[in-house]
Image (cartoon, rainbow, N blue to C red; front, side, top):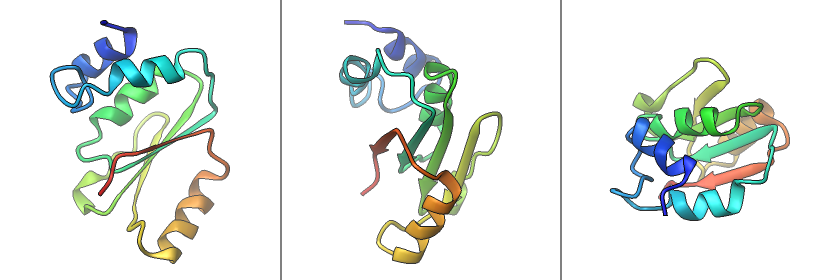
Length: 109
């Protein structure tokens, strides 16, 4: 089933699209009626899915966290930080950046 989220995943070439991991039909089922104010994705690679979430959730601030220093993307409503989720102080800094989060997408190791 092709959903709006599937189309956005194709538009931004995220690995979550049907031609990749095929997560977007399931995500669409879970999220289609939600209007979050804050979304956090852990494990962002090149940031393609952050752009997808920004367009899918037009009123949300989108945060990303990744251990890879090449994963920084800060534009529009998207803000990212380098974060090792195995290091407590990094998680504290992440929470200080995001505050309470409505949706967490965990796509890291």
